[in-house]
Amino acid sequence: MKKMALEEYKGVFVFAQQVDNVLDGVGFELLGKGKELAKDLNTEVTAVLLGSNVKGLADQLAEYGADKVIVVDDPELKDYRTEPYAHALASVINEFKPEIMLVGATAIGRDLGPTVSARVATGLTADCTVLEIGDFPLNPVPGKEAEQKHNQLLMTRPAFGGNTIATIACPDNRPQMATVRPGVMQKIAKIEGAKANVVEYNPGFTPNNRFVEILNIVKAVKTTANIMEAKVLVSGGRGVGSKENFKMLEDLAEVLGGTVSCSRAVVENGWLPVDLQVGQTGKTVRPQIYFAIGISGAIQHVAGMEDSDLIIAINKDEDAPIFDVADYGLVGDLNKIVPALTEALKAEM
Amino acid sequence: MNIVVCIKQVPDTKGGVKFNPDGTLDRAAMLAIMNPDDKAGLEAALRIKDEKGAKVTVLTMGLPKAEEVLREALAMGADEAILVTDRVLGGADTWATSTTIAGALRNIDYDLIITGRQAIDGDTAQVGPQIAEHLGLPVISYAEAIKVEGDSVVVKRQYEDRFHELKAKMPCLVTALSELNEPRYMTPGGVFDAFDKEITVWGRADLKDVDDSNLGLKGSPTKIAKASDKVAKGAGEKVTLDPAEAVEYLIGKFKEKHII
Image (cartoon, rainbow over all chains, first blue to last red; front, side):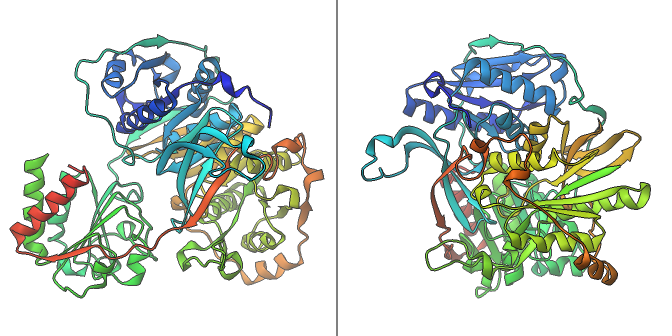
């Protein structure tokens, strides 16, 4: 790789994703983390806002901690397409030279991130769960103490289906780029009325063969296949008792902005479609919150959900193996607990 | 038309992960499979071949053992197979990997390149878009459906809450989701033929327009500072309470965890 003048790169940048001119929460979360990193580096956090007629969104980014907002506002950026967006973000990086660039690990960010990292010739670490400032190597190599680099972004991520954890650095290239899944980082408490320090920038857009054509946009209310992307899964098993009883789980899922999923027994009983099945013969999921309701916890089911960040089990059988992997286990009648929990959550939110 | 499908041999993480005594991954003890997203990409290519006629070439980068997935692809119906293998390519991150594969692809005629969205060992989803970037091609990732129309491909591109129907002029690169289709099985005749077929093996010297400084461990901008097994998750708290108390208990936990 080409040697870069690393000292020219300053500041923490966050890609502020918007779709239909609505900012995605992951941008606010990354600003929260970006602010911490910027503090450690004694620098600022800057949001990068790309879109068409999006200038009006900049103050919201200030309310969540952006010291500065770089806005690229151009009709070519109306709906997400890899090329104009990659051109915009890569141009911002080349112009403003950030030392850190954070992107949400969304279906947009996981396309934009790799394209931009290749274009600006730097490394990218995907789906990070921990970001911190530290030394690389972590401990100085005897006799080579002077070669240890300080103030590096250390990026920790799971690999091999969550079976290992690696901490990664990008010591010789800038910016140090990372994607982070939605919900992993915390946004700061909103600073009401904060006004953005806006910097407008437009690199110019000349359509070429790499600009794909959007023929159609279909906003789908999908019931299938998205359980792998869900942040909250309310999963039911045989113990739920009937197809009708899944209404309780749907209500709970709705309050938490989650999705209903299920065990194999539920699919075999014809209560829910196979696309919603979690487990070895179904889908492997890793949501932030996984409710296992009336699920005994057979190995094949556990294999598909044990990497969830927080597991809550509700089961009347206190010896159910699901309790061995649950963070919080409630022994009791799901028919009473689930509706009561839904009501209580409604009152809290 | 010429379609190249990039595939990867990966350890089957579903069958559980095994470790060497020193804590590194024991790849030899784990079943090696064709990465699921890649297999769906191969199936998509074979369906285009069935429908419109096409030459399907499969390409992989890996250890010599990765020949196994190429044989499987040939048995499914691929026409040619290329293995890119060389010690100097080892330890590559996604930048060095995509640089390598792009260097190999520059030797081949292609209209359409298909890769899987991501591999189950790394889950990065980076190599496909990065190959497109190195080759200057349009890229469409997260494909739920792919069809060829004249000199273009029309792809259903998945997002969290919608899909875009996108059209790109070939040559272009598409990354496939495993939801795309149900891959076919190898046929007995296919298996038989597959073992007679010659697999092209390329090394460093066969990569076109690639600088040594961008290859292997040395050419990787990202470096591993530390790797460890995940600590096995133990059981948490288990409580037996009446429903109202149970709800109160859980709400308290949610507040503690800043979930609400």
